[in-house]
Image (cartoon, rainbow, N blue to C red; front, side, top):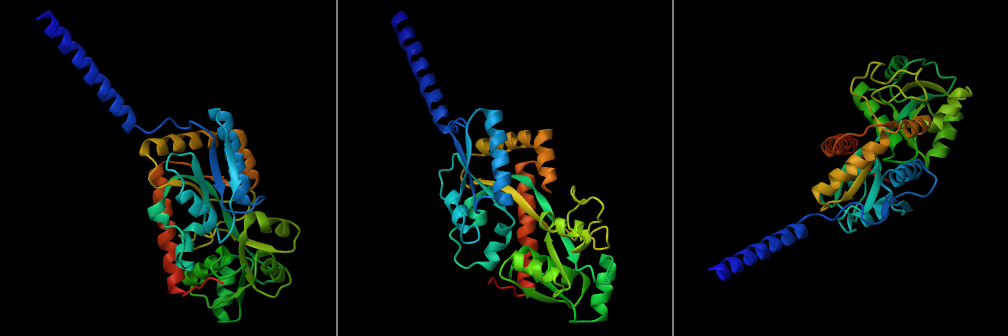
Amino acid sequence: MPNRSLHLARAAVALAAMALSGASWSQPAHWPSRPVTIVAPVPAGGGVDLLSRAIAQKLTESLGTTFVVENRPGASAAIGTSFVARAPADGHTLLMGYSALSTAKFLTKNLPYDLEADLAPVVHIGYIPLILVVPPSSPAGSVKELIDLAKASPGRYSFASGGAGAGAHLSGELFKSMTGADITHVPYKGNAPALNNLLGGHVAMMFDTVTTAIAHVRSGNLKALATTGIQRSPIAPELPTMIESGLPGFEVSAWYMVFAPKKTPAETLEKINAAINNVMADPQLAREMSAQGVVFAGGSIQQAQKYLAGEVSRWGKIIKDANIKAD
């Protein structure tokens, strides 16, 4: 009997070990277990790239694991985005996505990735609002006055953008939809020539990123009427928002969001979300980004999912209703 009891005890220990071993195989690996790559699907030097590097540096300091930024620009962010979509789903390859992702599916044929099927939102990093600017010679001194002028002279006023489907274009279309103003879109090959023609008084208005246009406003070469965020911009707090100016719901921003490959384990996604929220709570980082016009958002994975779904739904309708085709 003692031998039988000993055999039973050994068998129980062996089964327990097997169960523990099986459980360990079913659990996601420790994150981060090696250097993490944050893919910026844009050239080096722009806002997406700079924000990616600031976040990566703070994550490296916080977690003691190297976070590196890799630029994979091209095809309106499709090259870098598809690279992350196809990467191993272990949390060690992430994407710093931005506003173009919510409109690309409606503007670009044969995308090499599917936003909803291939990528998982992890955390909404933040946003930079746009700013509605007009030439200093414009008689409009407020959003209401601009609307009144446009309605009084249908077809006379025009708005510039850096190209069909660009943020400035979509903002103008939203303005038309919400106000009923008959204004004409004038696309240019890039933001710089669009802004130059606005400075020259060849078009009546433009929605531009606040960080780009604010220097022209400060110098008196442009007149600012409002910004487009939910709250006032930290670098132009004197300006009202479009919402404050009488257009409830008019909120447009150049937003940033971290994504991971879709099949990344939920536990790993939660760890990444918590780590990024932790570094965004750093006062120094918040001050540095605020000086660049970035308003941090943060929050849960579910909040990021909801925000993204809202952006896709809203801009998809505007693009379809206005029959916008990308250049």
